[in-house]
Amino acid sequence: MLIDRIAAGFVAVGRDIKAALALGQIGYFAAPARPCGWLLANGAELSRTRYSGLFQLLGTAFGDGDGSNTFNLPALPAPVGVWACIYIGGQVNPRTVTLYAFHPVTGEYQGSRPADVSLVDADEVVLRPPFTTDQAPPAGERQTAIMLNGQWVLVPDYRQVMLWGTQTGAHVSAQLGQSLATIGATDKPPPAFGVWNGQDWVIDQDARTAADAEAAKPEFRYLDDSTRRAALTQQAQQDARARLLAAYVARKPLEDAVKAGAATAYEQELLAAWKRYCNMLAKLSQQPGYPALIDWPQPPYDLRAELH
Image 1: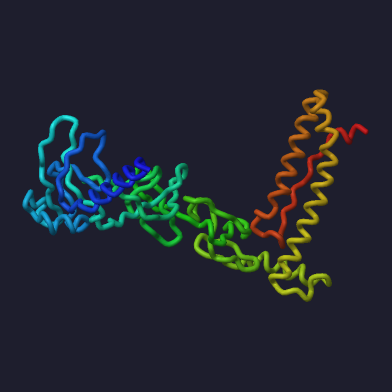
Image 2 (image 1 turned 180 degrees about the vertical axis):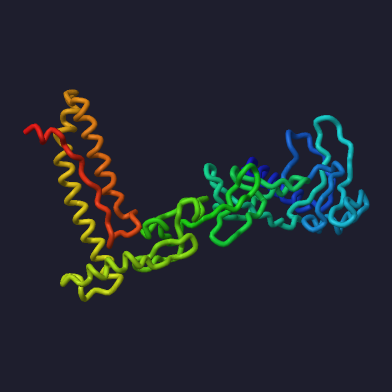
């Protein structure tokens, strides 16, 4: 049909026009924006490396840029509403730009990836997503970079390190930014009956002696230091649970009275004393000699018992 032949002719002409375009060709366009593959002929500086093909063609005929790394495009006048452009086509060497992402809330470094770079802007605009920067983050042992006020800052990072509390010898964990001093911890594993002296673990000889005395008992006689400590800890935990259970039984009627609004001032104070007692039982492991030497707290004394 005639219409099909006309359409095919337009397609062929378009191919011929596109094939006829040459690097450095000047064109004028009355359009809202310059077409893809063309740069404004406005005298802008371009990279000699990135636009190496165009630089080989133009050299420094329209300006030598900074004298070493850039060159200038021709500056051509154009009527209002018309773009004066120079054709570059695909003669652009990709520019490697790395972006470094950070967490939008914590600022923690999240990794890197190649940036998208505009192929048509004369000023080589980098298309940068939010929460990224082209500044490479620093690195340090057991440290992580975070973005703070537009700059990378190294902060302590012990989240993947096994730590022990210097007060209890128990395992503890750290959050990003917390130093060992902040949380009272060390990465040195504690020995049996170890006490932290501010620099390292030392053996608590009193606790060791008390444990040896306990070890003389038939149930502990054949245990080594580590197993003996574990056995003593288990025994201490069982004793603490029994005392806590008794405390909760004693607290129950007092708590019921408080909930009902019928507790006297004395009963309210007695309930508070029982709660303090339970709290001390829960913190037994923080005592220096634990589990060999335990200073057991005394339960509150109920004066009402003398009235019965």
